[in-house]
Image (cartoon, rainbow, N blue to C red; front, side, top):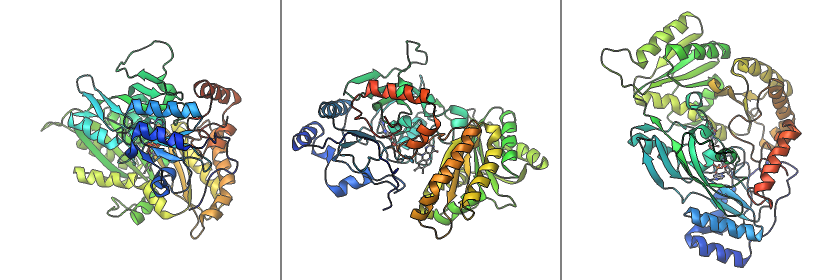
Length: 491
Ligand SMILES: Cc1cc2nc3c(=O)[nH]c(=O)nc-3n(C[C@H](O)[C@H](O)[C@H](O)COP(=O)(O)OP(=O)(O)OC[C@H]3O[C@@H](n4cnc5c(N)ncnc54)[C@H](O)[C@@H]3O)c2cc1C
């Protein structure tokens, strides 16, 4: 298994688990909540991509907030480090312990109860270990909608989603994960429980503490519960697959789609032909919705909570008219509309299959960047020139949530090149991409976070003032640096 950790590891606490501590942990979580054998630990110390394999004294799986609090208090008393983990689908190594980690991985998977659904108040109170898809289905069973949606939704957990402030394919309309939260419960690095589990839309009582923990990637505390916002369930949905002239045309289409759909654009995903071909190669059962003479495609979805009534114009009719206009304007080369839920699912499977397909394809590089929406075409153009100038045989497959200005600027390694050789180019390519995005006023991490992978990049690109504020917050809440040490920030 290749190791892809940065060459200079940060200082992390190295207090090992003593027999006494193991016994104390077992007394809190029971035998079923403690994994100590090497084989059992493997899935928890290996990241989703299979690129990082860390170490851990034990995996601890508490079943309640009280157990989390007692475990953290114990670790705090002994200076033992903790790596919080949800579904372990993060793509930056945030949930993977460093190889030198001697403490615990604290997995939230057993805390998977839905505590309350309030359809009238449009909210839902849940434990951190609930799988995202289960929450979507529960909301739907109550005729409500939880908009957070991403390719890993069958296994990522809400605590992980909030800790990474996940994005996904509905941000355009509903915002990213932090926008979907009313309240949180968090276990702090000293074991104290902060009860901010309030279902209030308005609450201007000093600093809004919940936002500290969202996007903190488990470095400031452990999210144990959340109150999530819900929306009316979509009743009339139209999904379309468009072959578009180029990224500029894709942006113009999106810009016009807002009024044409009467403000009902839900998703707008740009995909390159090479990304689609990669999915078709590796994900069984996927079919190409459309082949046209272009390198760029758009997955466009409109949805309305208003049920479609006979004799009235619904989303499909509006979409048909819109696509005809866009064909005439030369922005769209060809298009297919999904007429059934199953056809729509098949289109979405292609978009959602990209991460899985890229893992199957072999070594690659991927940059999750954002820039002002109107500058996306310019970034793609300049970025491709820069990267191909360094390694002409690298194979780009850009795609992205273009309505959010978020591009996954991704590359498969040249055919036949192994991971180790590709890694030799990684530093220079990363610097070129990140310098470019920064010079254009963009961000080096749009939605995946920092974790281990971008630790050095964050300290390179963020100002001393910003880094100082972040370190001050970290030191105030976690003076011993036991909570997910060596992630996000070098102290
Ligand atoms: C196929 C695929 C598609 C994806 N698509 C997207 C996408 O469209 N948009 C997007 O933003 N991301 C995407 N991701 C990345 C990933 O799914 C998200 O980052 C997700 O939110 C992580 O959730 P998780 O439960 O797996 O968290 P983990 O990977 O377990 O953890 C992620 C981070 O959060 C911390 N953490 C986890 N749980 C807690 C908790 N309860 N309290 C405190 N800290 C915690 C961990 O320490 C770690 O730093 C994708 C990943 C895959 C594999």
